[in-house]
Amino acid sequence: MLFSGTPIRPAYFLISALALSLAACGGASSDEAASGASAEDSDSANTGAQTGALAEMILGDANAPVTVVEYASVTCPHCATFHETVFPTIKENYIDTGKIRFIFREFPTSPAELSVVGSMLARCAADKGGTDAYFLVIDSLFKTQRTWIRGESPRNELIKIASQAGMTEADFDTCVKREELLDLINENISTARDKYNVNATPSFVIDGQLRNVSSVDTFSEALDAALEKAAK
Image 1: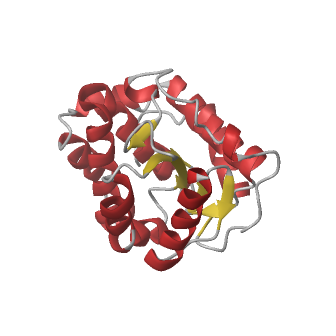
Image 2: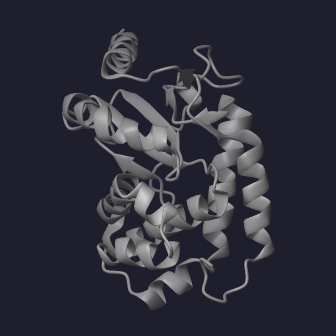
């Protein structure tokens, strides 16, 4: 049992049902503009409102001409593959060079309880070490996905991962009880669903448009087109 005697609160059932009704790991995203979204309202103003665990998790220059939002699940194998094989090149060529601002948002998939708790731990790590600690935990969750999801004690494996960001077992127990983090994850799910029509992970919104990108080449082409449009 994940929580070692800690009751699973009703909020977990709520977010699990919502996530599972919307998200599948893998699958194609629409290449059409998301309903009601445009480059002008694609989260370009959503920075600095919160800090620590409740902040937007952002990589890159805040003034970059193009904003990319990834909706992903730490229990999704396709997300893990993307972050292992595609993301490093995108980061090197577009994020580190100041061309794009990259926002990572949670969109839990099965097993939803583990997905939610993993996401919460990453956010709690940001209270101690900012976005660097958040992405350190996210990266570790992806790299060790099979171990902590399928192991005999997911709780113990997650505590090991959290310890990389300076979190203790007590920090873990406090973290998984934070209702405001569940509210934030639910908000990310609702935004993904209602604003961008996201129904699979990983999904990418490039300046307000949900795009079907799954390789370095297709992602680069989409980003180059967005950069060209932004320069006009």
